[in-house]
Length: 334
Image 1 (cartoon, one colour):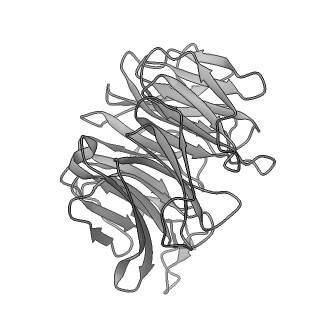
Image 2 (image 1 turned 180 degrees about the horizontal axis):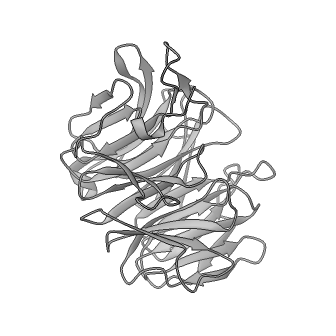
Image 3 (image 1 turned 90 degrees about the vertical axis):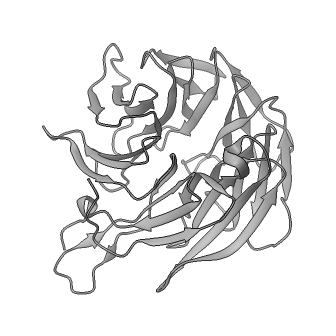
């Protein structure tokens, strides 16, 4: 099913660069960062793309090259120009979009690919967490040249590390060992281990409206919701994807809405509170869809005021394209 959309789809093709992650700026409306890799991330270099929107579509503001594939990107929460990426050579890179030069700093401690990086969401701390194929998670202060501590416990590749938007010093991780784990930086130990799927878990995210609710997406094609107060069974399960789910994001504007992208080339929007939870399926990529984000900026109002407010979504895929669009299902009434 091809999705109907509320506004124009802005698209940019970047030849020779396969998209892995897309993140809207928390500061500048319409600015997007995209982490990409050559040769599907198997070999070659990577490029961080900084994009802006205009009336005619997407415009490349700046690009930064790295000598290995870039797999994830996160914006600073205290400086609109700063980002962190992670790459296949086991390093993290700190970039300044106000400068056309290379990285401000490189953090090299992981011994295998770093697949996930996230900047803390609570104002009382400015920390970065990274997850690697070396089965470790590292905590970083971007102003310090080495990691603050290392978290061990996962028994396979770590695919996703995400800070809680509610609880300072708390983050979640998802792994090929089929578990979701909750960690506390104060104790450098695991708080909760959830055997969430009987398959590799590629992504997790926190609900923006409920500090106890997380979602996981896995190779078994399912999304599952977990209430940390009772993790014996999921509070919801969403089925529909036909290949592995690569990334999942909760909506910043709806308590029960989330989005997922998959190796089945689709992006799907869900409301887990509804009897028929699948809201919309977007099919505009021709390869694995890996990057996905929903804009944190206030929704943009439709000029005629009759339809309502659109919420922007960005995604990127291995088909060398990045797209920004306004799904009809996320339109908020005027």
